Picture 1 (tube, rainbow, N blue to C red):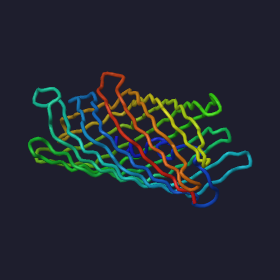
Picture 2: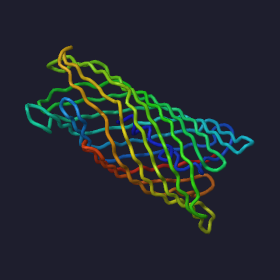
Picture 3: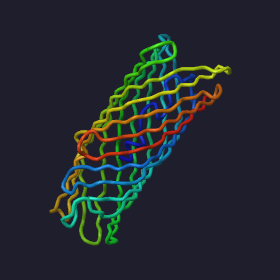
Length: 301
């Protein structure tokens, strides 16, 4: 969860493909901040759930940009980010469903690389690869603590193509697929030794973005937008094994809908800003509710 949030989407990272300008080495720098509240439940042996906050920031650099003779633009860059999850944990314990069992603190420091291709008609293809170092602790209501150390590899491939509705409005269908593998180190609390095994988690997104394009007296671009995303996670199951015998399995499969609205604004020739608010709710029997905000800037050299 924390690594996937750090990865995000192309528009959360860059604002809009029209903002990708410049040519040659180090044409632009950018930054992003995100945060929000979440409640989520999964199925499995103890049906665990989280209720807390997830927030972080990201700083990136376009290393190289090139525009071909056919009008296709390519950008290659890197970024670093830090995310934090603070949450209360519930689950099946002592023969009681949805019982409070403790809390969780988890930090994720990430480094990533991306390649973006933008066509002359505004369609884009974006690929990203990210490594996240995980460091945190879980604490039970009895006071027992368990250190959490590990890492996650996350890869994303995303595409979108704007379709003109009028002179000022476009409708952009989008598709994204994310693959993630989490590996946690074995650890021990005061009771048992715990080992972790996780499958590759696949997440897909289908989205539709309605976006306007307006210019004021200063000829600066202003782009209000509204977006609907359908998210589906499949194939991600992890297993915690206690003293090599007892196993607790959790299935991370889910389906949810996300609503988002915001604005992208060109402040001057060098600076552009973007921001949006999101709300997410489950479409299946697994409880999921989240609200958040995403803010970003891009500086063109």
